[in-house]
Length: 417
Image: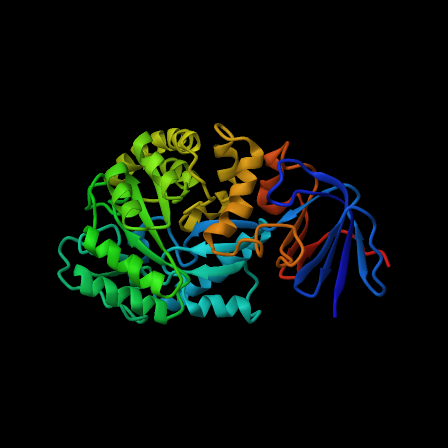
């Protein structure tokens, strides 16, 4: 049995609005055993005196794509899956270095890369995977050139790297089959595309994708496994469709209106904003080869993003934390904290990346909190992030400790015995 005691902690537990100073946190193996307001003595324990630094839960990013190697889809069209996996391994290490101990992959992440992390073959965050996202023909997940009539294979050995991220299904029967197949392969959730997208140049951003019957089929199949559906959606029209059909989380949502936000709040549907990806993609897109069509879409959703935060907050919609960064943009992951502070207080932003995201992952009380019985995913921050979100920038430079599942990934503090 391995026991670590963190002493003299200012605890942000992921739920309360304030830090609790003078706390002790006991970790036994892979769990938090005790959170106490007084010193704790455990015979044989390793002791870390963190001297008033902030101890908080590991961060959670609820919208990533670990297999995305490049922002420009055209560069991945002929990339073999083996090369894509090597990119993913490097990406996972960098994510963990920033303090994200858990991520939800919402297109492409599969049981193979999840097991690689679980078996210790590569450092990385805990993964919740959706397998291939499901798109209709001509939808956001249909990346074929206009001149390509072939339907991509849904098997893991598809034609190219893009086939690893999405699959095409039309009609209720095909959607059911696709959802069942991804669940069979270990999906923790099902992702569907219900509106046009930024990165797909041939579908209108404002378009609604999938019929009500098709969306309900996906929700029904996920529910049969006690799982849920998340939906890529930008507009009010597509978001209303998803919410009415029982979709649990809306991804992006930039073009939402007040009435739709109120509908989400009524149905307890989560919003997962991903604002950093638009600013970074618009800024760096020209040099990385994005088309003029994609850049125009980026400008539209970028301008609407901050307003979406205001609308959702006013309506009482619970908002998770996502980034959706592709390829070369991955190093901007933590900038999502800074963008949101234009509208939201730091404590709400931190909760979105901890306890709210844990709810989304169906891991309430286990992840995103410092509490008895929770997984020992712990950060020690060199300061108070509730006052200064800059402490979560610089690729984890201000994190003295990163612990995932009771194991130190990083520790710059000497033990006391």
